[in-house]
Image 1 (cartoon, helix red, strand yellow):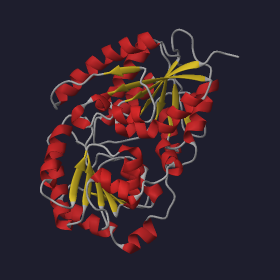
Image 2 (spheres, rainbow, N blue to C red; image 1 turned 45 degrees about the horizontal axis):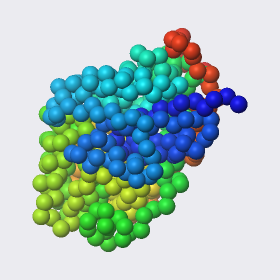
Image 3 (cartoon, one colour; image 1 turned 135 degrees about the vertical axis):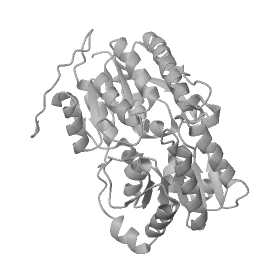
Length: 389
């Protein structure tokens, strides 16, 4: 019997931990792997809820903690964190010596981890490559991580083709669907009383679930102001989850907390946990904001989404997604449309373009059997000219 593969899985936020949940637990239970969980990013930040505690509460023990936070919330601080991250991920990975490292998405922390792994000649498996989010720097980071990676697991067929366009060989690119949808398929929704305890208010009335992430530059606060004004007009119970740790995230969270202060039907929570977040989403009248979860997960729960601005420009959309520019009037109009019973009946019953099913099992099957390069991770550029590869 061959020795287990040492599988390092990097998680940097509450969001990607939820998406990686079943892959992490699947690897931990499979004798073909020796799981090495690497915790970084906002998991280790008090300002973003120190969600490492949620990981430990599930019985997981990190193999490494990589704190790369720079004080402040500017683009320069993000760049400093990126540089610090390459160094600290390299130090952690050189001690762990994994056979393979798994990363998901397009966060700057992931780029730091992937850069360090590439320098250490550790093969990388990347989830959610080939996608587009044209309104933010995540777009560039995602494609950079694709080129640093050896194995690729995409969430939809158009994204698989885009990874091929970037020169990755078809034999190393697998379209498996979005891992977040597996969590939905396998979860037991939390009861209303538990959700109300976590949120801190009654959920008896139709409630909006809102998440707003920084857009980059000066647009962020103007767009957030338009959203908050539209929510005041809507006058519905609203639960905000905190923004991510991008530059401007602290300012966004502070503005949302000021907005909710003194309002009986408004709450801002750092994190609900993946089970709490999706359970609340399943009960929500609509999802509002600019989070990718409104495009990926909400359609599988038959919940309408009001997607604001261009942060998610270029992503596949279900018919249940209403795009609105970042203006008070447009957002207010979109919320009204989403709340129409006819909209939910006609637009929220279609298929999710991101698939579903037991994504983690498909990924782990590949990670278990795929031959890994020894020494230099050599890749031949694949020239794809269209057609079926």
